[in-house]
Image (cartoon, rainbow, N blue to C red; front, side, top):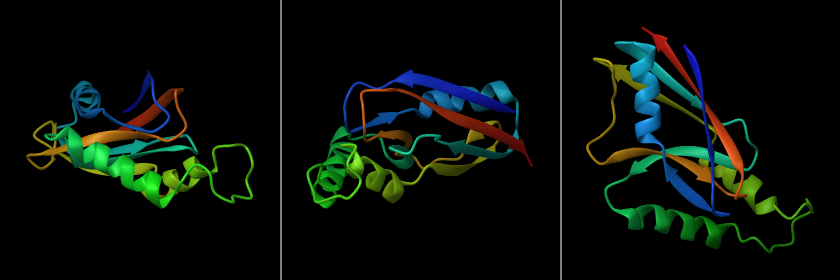
Length: 132
């Protein structure tokens, strides 16, 4: 089953917890055992799994990415969002998560984050559940 989650982002760089929305999509799919594939169809955003209990973790990730890939650099791509493309490539645009007993298999402290690097924008993420 394929589902598209759509939402608006509010910051240029942000990690947005989408765990509940992805979990709900898995529940609607009625897949009891299989995999959940996430795909971000944008060149300036991504998706990752990391700790979601302490909000400072996502702030640290954003801060480190901004340090590693600054907005103002001598980029040859001149649209003004070159750093966003690089950050997207670093984080990646896909995830595969195991589904067991109708739920995502995540660690105790883990959450799924949509990574925005060129916001604010209207975004979407594809959620594909596959019975296995």
